[in-house]
Image 1 (cartoon, rainbow, N blue to C red):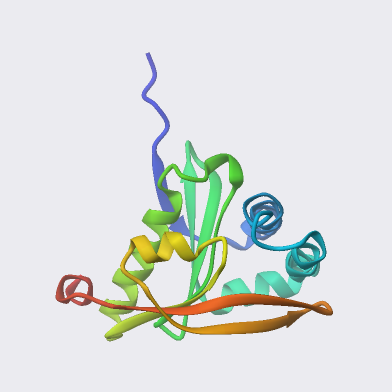
Image 2: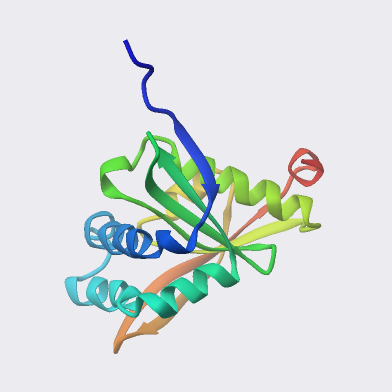
Length: 166
């Protein structure tokens, strides 16, 4: 009997970009449907249509990929060593820990790089995830994407001594 596939994590590779763009779009289309209109979702997801630009953005930040049985199921990126810029998990893998291991890793990396707190502009769909992890709302924002206005919430979490010492 072969062992069950394990959830793992690795740095992003340039060859991951098309799949990460697909995960990004699928997460928006399926996981944000209750919080954003179809036109808002389309405008948001279209930011990955230029895969070269999407890849450049991911490469400029510290981007990690969550894998399950070797296949990418999610990704997250840390900007300026203190801000979670992106955290997306494929809908088929949602709720199975990929988002949590990615978030844990970014929190530890931010702390190890001297950050006292970490910030995220959380979509309405992701706000509960971050609240459960100890993030608190700071401000409500409205962002213009592709001619549509989308709301999100800036949230912060104070990093513990343990996260800063990792």
